[in-house]
Amino acid sequence: AAIGAQVPFEIPVISGVRAARNGQEASLSLMLILLFTVLSLAPALIMMMTSFTKVIIVFDFVRRALALQNMPPNQVLFGLAVFITVFIMAPTLTEFNRNALDPYINGRSSTSEFMNKGIVPFRNFMIKQIGKDGASEMNLFISLSGKDRTKIKTIDDIDSYILIPAFMLSEIKKAFIIGIIIFIPFIVIDLVVASTLMSMGMVMLPPAMISLPFKIILFILVDGWHLITYNLVRSYGGGA
Image (cartoon, rainbow, N blue to C red):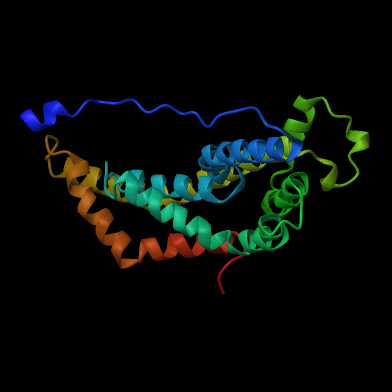
């Protein structure tokens, strides 16, 4: 304790900050700020422009349909959703790396070119997933933005700030439709168990306690995680 008391606590001073001396230094500083901004927004970007939103909502529906509170834990579901998202988005990420990121890192393109080319693969992915089923969401945000519809000739004329929320709403709608389908067999089990208990006069016994094992058994017998993951990936055109 005596030795530790002799060591003074010092607060470091950052003395390396100074004004940029030329345009190149200013450009490098702005690029660094932009990089940190993109990294801080990375979780939001993952949710907005990839399949993550749909995957995590479907997984949460599965857990709720099984009446499991925290099993699997949130960390496990989020981790699984992230890796499935990476698997689904692999072709898009490869195109992004080849056409935008790699030329930018090697100095063959500017920051503006990187931004313009980098958004293209994700726009193509979102446009493909919206399709005809998401026309109502697209029309909603076009109307809210006040855009003149006569000036929109093709899908490429739609700005990204309209395309992204339309894509997210479309993904949420599809996830809820899948959730309804997932809930149906488990609701049937709950009804059968509840009616059986009432006919036996066991009204004081919670039906959820009895139906839970049957739900888990059914989910295991049909290999539920395999089916859900397979159909999620196939809904994006992946898999064989």
